[in-house]
Image (cartoon, rainbow, N blue to C red; front, side):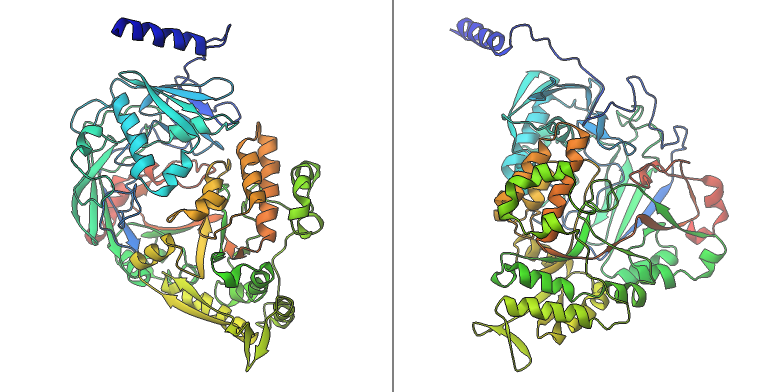
Length: 606
């Protein structure tokens, strides 16, 4: 009976292969569209120093945050910030100087046919867990199935187009995809973080975890105190330290992360030498808080480093699940009440530019009127789209920066009247209900931006209440979509794809914890996202991204904020760093401790 079953399976496998089909070659990497930059046998990425010394400790501050779990794969709890170089390795790893390419990490080869209907990986024989056991195909399959069954909703959406995963050997697996064109799927599966099946047996995956987990990466969890600090220690016998994708990276022996409830306290702690490296997100602090002796004499380096990747969209994000915000005219009116020019001058020291696209700072951003390629995509949906998508360039409302936003507020009032709102006793009312909503924050620094916005709304009869809560409550409420408006962001890459379903898709809008916090459930947007995902080449991807961008912008789902195509960095002058900054920005894992520089600092700052 067993022999007959084996023969039947063999026959089925042969019949599944089209006549004349050849087995696709096994490669060291895979690109979305273009050729790989790095050939087989490459020695290291261009943006690292392969001879960087190992050693020392980097201390980092995590402001306005806490942690109570080492399980980042579920929506429960507050997971710790990741190490620079993770605990768990992925099948493949991307390079920071290509739009979207991946090279083997746990996997030594990747194999996919021209139609990308499946992808196969062969694991490296030397890949090991920190307990010395090998990483196997069973680990890969268990991880994939567990993330889809018990992980955060994101994973079910991200891997939705995977039909099944098959074990083809002790160290080889194949992922078979559902019918449809989706060139990105092999790369998506390549990003899979692989977890140890044997370690998780007897443990509940869907629960928070404060036991240091077993991993396979360059670091492991060391000392920690929940909510206060965690240390990640180098694994001395890390199996992958000499791989080309790792050479010159992960140079610190120890990473010490301190958690701060307050951003101001964190900044003062940095200037006092309690941690070493700080990314500054506040324009006010960047302009005013670094005039200290340590910066003036060079002990602290302050620099703005340009980068070339899309900045995405940050804005005041509206929740369409609230009936109040389902009218596009109301949403447009709320956008007219924000005075960016005044905010930029009065609050941000003129550092920012206004965001005009969901793919800002890239060729994917829409500008002007739709070109022929975009019109061919949009025309079938003309009857279901606002006329402005075809006839006007989206430009956020402007002011003269004086703080007198009268013209825009007058236009906002007209839109609200068209939507049926009337003024009664100085308040806008419709069907007996006032136009009132809450702006939910988790960062007190944003109050100085949001409160003037609320004052402008008050001038046209809208009550906007500003409420700031702690990070845990904020996450619970946003995961449950229990808000009217938040300050949110949608990060983008040079190669948008399946994650767009999670941002804007109708199915994601229904799932608690999804990234479709807006609640967009529009068949046109679904169709545009599907077409973008199926783009056969780069030119098509750009056209589809621009078309989607226009539809999202004219939906007035967010009040666009601002962007800066630079990273504002401050760090104690103890580091060495590579000469090249890749297009995707500073790669801190490629830095190292410079012994001579560290020795020159006062002993308390070393």
